[in-house]
Image (cartoon, rainbow, N blue to C red; front, side, top):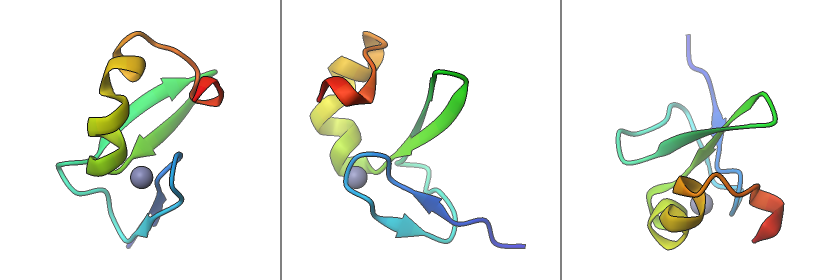
Length: 54
Ligand SMILES: [Zn+2]
């Protein structure tokens, strides 16, 4: 059973989240970010800023 995951920032879609992707719970939803976006925005994510702030 493949569960597609979409990067909440750039919209990249994968069949399943690679280990390099990170998840972030925002407003009760679990969002995923690809490795590129995670690296670019890791600081913001760790600060628990909402993705709309980007
Ligand atoms: Zn991305």
